[in-house]
Length: 629
Image (cartoon, rainbow, N blue to C red; front, side, top):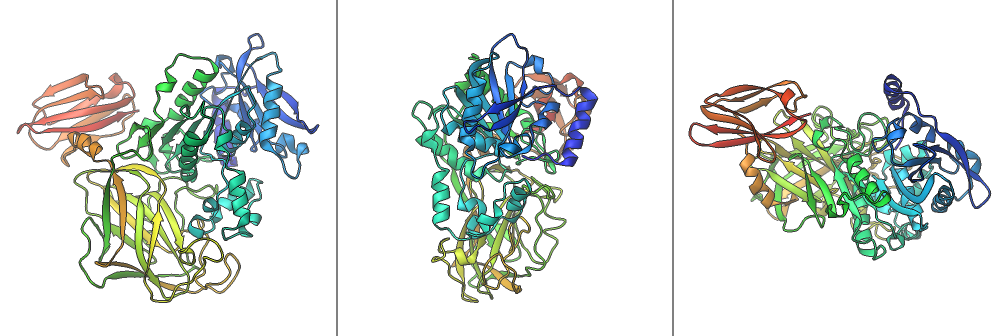
């Protein structure tokens, strides 16, 4: 998480308009090596000993003076918790405590040790925070302080994986650029180890310690976050390897959220990129508070009845639950790439068929949104049509307009048969949902470097034979998304996605150094014996439920979503017996007979989701959702 100048300006402006900044107690907390960490302490009062929320940040504790998290804002007097916010060793107020190899887990232990000695502490400490503030929670939990009761890491995993920094062998340039800009300085060591080796083996094993976690954790992730792969993996590790006393107490909340850190796109906000998810707004704080209240306040809020996985099904715009991920009883559904840019459920019968494009490393396909981190890039779902799909260095494969929903849950799997006239090149995949208005909204992406098709060690490296056809398999990140009726599924294939991934120069030389660039002619095959496809894991039981909400193209509800108090027009261009509006629990709010159009004043409705039900003259029932925000 990073607060940029522009985001801070908006943040401060809103804060000044509605409230005065908080006035914490500034303290220096002693560490075991004799140095001190700077901290701000926020107390509702000094008379009652309370549990404490500890936040450890490398991004300057000062910013929390304008708004505390978890819905507290500047109203500290309403908080059931104390807050202690600490600058990391070597950062901002704790700059003088810098050492060459800090142990942040032990620092967290020492801070908790100091907290429990204070009169305002009841010796219960919970931790909270996103990104780097989440990673340090795992490190602190590893040290097992007896007063550390629970943790809420958001969009963060403790692991240091080769695949995180080199997905399928390709350097994540914008990610390391941003980490360097934030002061972590990782690009040097990462670039020095472009192949999987003993350095990566040591790093991965050193940062893998689920068996040392002895407190319950609520992980909060996002489908548009770059950490979703690592978080799904680590949650499963916690559920199987952490201390037996807490294995069944960990929970995972996954929303339609990007990583956040700048701009309006944050974990828990309605706006994510160019889309809005009003049904998920504020849900991360809601569930975090329920979790913290249960473990720190002994609240009788039935927290443990929550499922292991509570996830947001995008497209359907609803929260669902499961005890495993992906859910059980899913059915494979393949869409084959075909001549002319078609994406079809029918396999090609042609014996020789391919599509081709040129890739010039000097003019790469640009990164437009997605699971980015660098603060000069767009983040989250963005329309790929205006810039990415308008270029000539791309192959676009699109399904027909869907008549029934495709309810996917899990990792989409892509199999491609490819060739190139160069010894090495990349293949980039972007998965998009094409809306009825032709917006091609990015869902997720991945990349594959051909020299690594046999593995990622230096001995695995093997170059291509120009013109030879190779099979590659690419897993896209985990996703819960429904492609709705009226929408289309799209696969964009390029050989670059810059600066999200570093460019392949196509010269088969040493990677990530200056050198000659070569233009590659790359081909994707779609024929009977070499059928490229994307495979979804489809929940057909959800499809059956959704069919009752199948929408006629003649049913118009606008505006939708609607602001509270706004007039909504409900119109069906055919003969109607009655139109009714119901809550999601089936309670009827309005019923009008023999009209094809009504206007509904939403001032009488609470924010939420409603069902508009239309019965036509020929006894056909049509249902759709209305969202009031």
